[in-house]
Length: 229
Image (tube, rainbow, N blue to C red; front, side, top):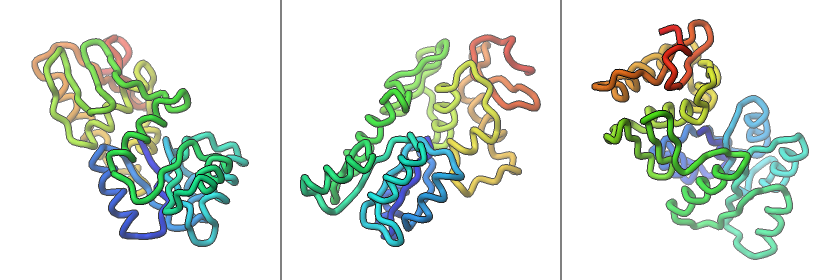
């Protein structure tokens, strides 16, 4: 899942981004409201974390402009102001949820998971493909009942493939959702991670789940006929 974090305090932004990346999220950071609007227009995000007190354009203005443009991605608003009227204003401007600072990072993660479980997010608690099982809350992965140890980025990639099971996903789609704005589309990093996943998921098991479609991308399926490999 790829997140746009809009926070002008660099220390706070760095702390939140570090914690989210450790949880397998890809994170882009915008430091003011105008930059946030630009990044939301040119990139695909699965969720936006939006601070209220921002330079250039405040969070409420950004939220209203995003919703006015047809932006339907879930928005979690952050603010140091926790009064009821402030929360009401944030929700009325188009936010899906509201979290007052200071907050426990575990609560932030729980709220993100809750937003992603809504119909627009389509993130189930447990996802399965054949004998592969993912727990999207704990990030536990098993294949044929045996636990599979994955890095945060490996988990993010297999989660994206599982949530798009049966559909071909191209390198651009994978880069948009699994990596952040620093992703180099001309690198072979996706191929490297696919090879790692195949090694970890298929070792000792005859059936391959991740298939290559030449010139198109990758597809996760229990059907061996869907790929070219």
